[in-house]
Length: 187
Ligand SMILES: [Zn+2]
Image 1 (tube, helix red, strand yellow):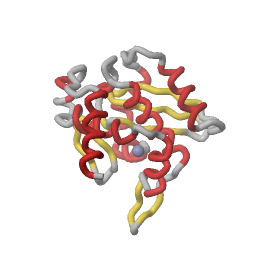
Image 2 (cartoon, protein in one colour; image 1 turned 45 degrees about the vertical axis):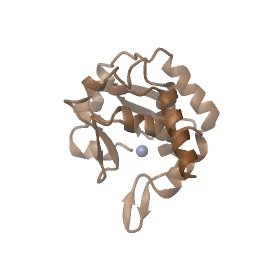
Image 3 (tube, helix red, strand yellow; image 1 turned 180 degrees about the horizontal axis):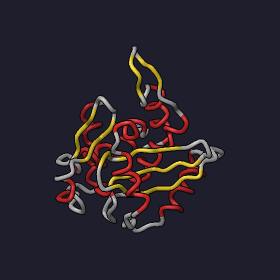
Image 4 (spheres, helix red, strand yellow; image 1 turned 135 degrees about the vertical axis):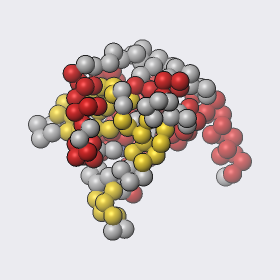
């Protein structure tokens, strides 16, 4: 999602400024600037943004902010800042946030949305394993996510996420098996 809702709701300083001023140490086991470079070069070359990434302790699963100087920051919730989180999950989330820089929100069926139909089509066209990743998120974070339809984001419940952190019950290979057998059965 984009960050405008948080800016207007007054919780921007609390969550997002803190993430920048007192950054959480990345625990993913790989270098984040390298991953950002890789994603930008592979999917978004010539976009020309100076991108950073920080982990937030509270708020949404992920979001992005940008300014007129072509600087952008992706924020990802701490629940995903762990070495057991598959790289595909982090990759798709970063990619999703990059898509917000390309496809602006607009009115659809009389209502503004930051994820119009062409946004989802664009995201889908970029990443083969997109559905596996969303399934990993749905299964592993189910006890701590809350979908906020009004603001089009996935919120992480403050009191729940620590019990999920590092205890992701279904690994990525298992997700692939579930997804593939599901598709064989229904298609
Ligand atoms: Zn979004």
